[in-house]
Amino acid sequence: MIAKLTDPERVAAFAELSAWQKVDGRDAMQRSFRFKDFVEAWGFMNRVALLAEKQDHHPEWSNVYNRVEILLTTHDCKGLSARDVTLARAIDALVGK
Ligand SMILES: C[C@H](O)[C@H](O)[C@H]1CNC2=NC(N)=NC(=O)C2=N1
Image (cartoon, rainbow, N blue to C red; front, side, top):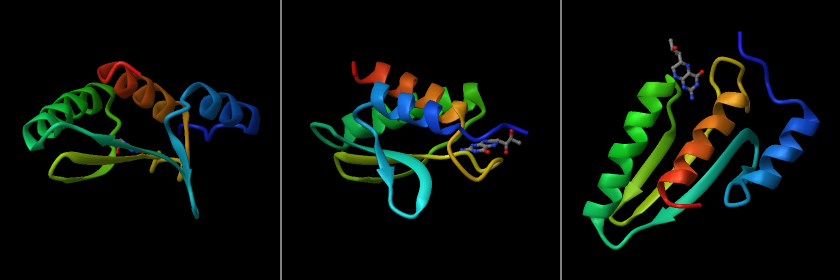
């Protein structure tokens, strides 16, 4: 069973992943992305989907035209874990931050 992040790990994670925000009422992190159009947004989602499969860790997300909302949390521990940090880092690397 994967462990939830400790308080110091949580502080470090949100400091490092500064584009990600805490979520009201859930132990999760979220980030919004905006692209030129749907094709760009969909291309990004394809890349994230491949990362997620490779990491066996899957986002909760939605898309409206050129916007993509991603929420990361770990269902296995009902909260944030190191898996979310790893996936968030990889997603940030896809968009160059
Ligand atoms: C069986 C499979 O490895 C698990 O269900 C994985 C798949 N993807 C997952 N994704 C997320 N976000 N949380 C999980 O706990 C999780 N568990």
